[in-house]
Image 1 (cartoon, one colour):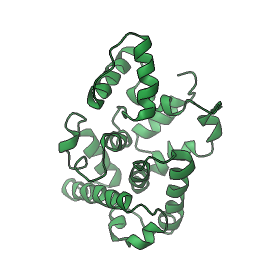
Image 2: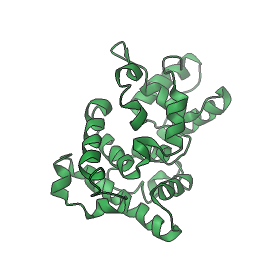
Image 3: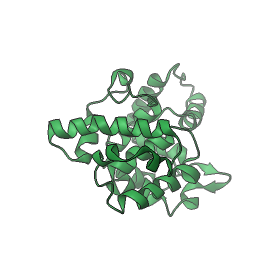
Length: 222
C-alpha cells in the first residue's frame, strides 16, 4: 500500500462515480475499451480522451442515450474494435431502461444497477449477459457505480495471490471465490476492497511508479 500513495483519494472518486469528470458515457466507453486487454494508460486512456474531445465536448453525446444514435463508422474512427462498441451500446441500452423506469439520470442509473447487482450471479445479470462482458468488466462497472469490490484480473490476482501465499492463506479456485475472499480480507485489514484492487494497478512499472508516470491523467480517469 505504501507503493500506492493517494490510493484512498482515487478510490473515493471511483466510489462516488466521479471518474472521467463524472461522465457515465466515458466510464462505459472506458470499460468497453479496457475489456480488449490492451495497455490502459498507453492505449485506452488516449482513445477515451479522443472520444471525449470529439463527441462529449462538441455536445454530440450529452447523455448515455446519445451513444445509441451514433453511427458505427464514425465511432470506429476512434476505436476500430466493433465488439467494444456493440458492448458499450448494449450496456447503455440496459442502463437507459433503468433511467426511464426509475426516472433517474445517468449516474443514478449506473449506481442503481451496481448496488442491485451481485458478483455471485454476474452471469445471469442483464449486463453480465452482454456479449464481451466478462467478470472483470462486470466488476469494473460495479466499482464505477459505487460498489466497494475488486476485479479478479491477472494483475490483481498476481499481486494479491502472492500476499495470500506468504500468509499461508489458501488461494481460491475460481474468480468469484477470489473476489469474496479479498472483500473479507479488506474488512479485517481496515482497507477497502477497491483500495486493494487499485493498489495492485499502481505498483511499480519498470521501476517507475504509475502514479508518478501518469500523474497528469490520474485525476480525471481515476
